[in-house]
Structures are given as C-alpha cells and as structure tokens.
Length: 285
Image (cartoon, rainbow, N blue to C red; front, top):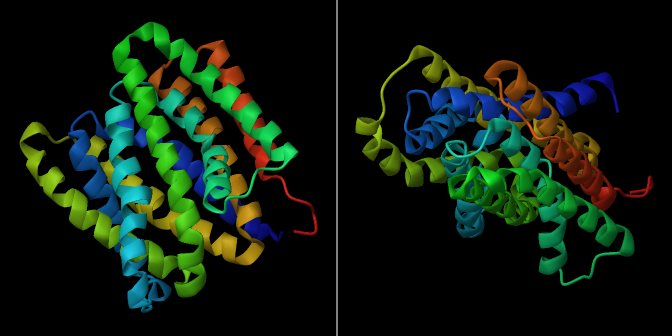
C-alpha cells in the first residue's frame, strides 16, 4: 500500500469512530428522528458534487439499491441516535467493531457455504467479545439492554447490506450506488424528520455536529472507503473498521467523561481479534 492508501484507510475509521460522539452532541438539541435525514442530506450533497457519483446505473438494479438503502442507511442510521439515548457512545462504538463478524456470518448464509475452522474460531472469539461488551450494561436497567439491542440490530443490517452492495458496486461503480441509496434513504427518512421538528430545539454545537456527521461521516468517509476498496481490495479496506472502537472509546472517555467497564474493554479487544481472524485471508488473495 502506498502512503495515500494508508490515508484512505485511516481517515474513514477516524471519522466513523468520531460519529458516535457527534451523534451525542446532536442529541443535545435535535430529536433522534431528525438527525438521520439531516446527515443523509449533507452527505448526499457531498457525493453529488463528485462527477463519478452521478454516472448512470442499470435500471434493473434499482430494487436492490432500494433494499440497500433500507439496510445500509435508513434502519442503522436511524437506530444509532435512539440507541445513544440509552447506552454510551463508547459502548456503541465498541459494538461496531464486531461489524465484520456479522458480514462474514451473513456471507456464509447467503452463499450456503459453511465457514472454515479458522472462520468459526474467529466468529466464536468475536461473539464472546460482543457479550463481554454488553454484559456490564445489564445492570443499568432495561433501557440500556434495549439500546444494546438496537446497536446489534443495526450491525446485523450492515452484515446484509455489505453483502448486497458488493455485486451492485461491481456492476455500477461504488459512488453511483451509494449516492442513489442515499437519495432513497432521504426520501424515506425525511417525513419522520419533519414530524420530529416540534420535538427539537436548536443549538449551534448540535447543528455543527450534524453537519460534520453528514459531510464527513456520510459523505467523505464513504467516498474514501470505496476509493480505497477499488485500489487495494475490499479485504484490506475493511481494516478501517478496526479503528472505529478505539476512536469512539477515546472520545467518549476524554470528552464526555464516560465510565467504561473493564470487561467491556476486554470484550472490545476480543471482538476486534475475532473480526481479524474471521476476515484474515492468505497473502495471495
């Protein structure tokens, strides 16, 4: 990998890791249902300015792109703000480190191919890590358990979405698919956002947080990640996922004074190790 490739690898991980802190800041003024359409709107504005994203796509692929919009954006991006009303940004970010585990699990189900022993080992390690992250929240009441459930549901959606996205991107290009999915996602989420305006207030720091969440997290990070995947392959590009829990944990502790259980930190390490083992490929791949 060249120096520019390393930047494309690191930048999305940092941005997506910081997105959970930005969601927490946005929640100070905005209703959770308003955050999602706003971030999609700002992110889509970035992508639509990129000529490659405006290239035409196959009409036959629009139904799958609509499904991708639901599973990749509408459901998970809507769940995260509601989840962060119940669990900390640190826990949310650490659980996201398990995303590759769900991607690998769904891929095995879709292609009806049993995982290898190495993959089974990685999945086992990773899911033990997920349990360790979630267990400390059990003593905080049912609300926290619901929040963890929301995050896990969002990650399961990512598992299906990323497996749907691969063939779509191969046929049409990554950025055109992402832009169309964002447009569909905005159409779906906008009515809920408009209805939530009376429940929202306004604060500049919350608006700036949503603006950054959209421009950086839903715009530039997507563009950087898909560009890297096209240059070095999806396997190497997926390493950016491992940066998310570290950044989220650091910002949660440093800026939000969140307390994190030692068991959750250990679980985060297990989840990352499991994701690495599950997705590790031979050098010849």
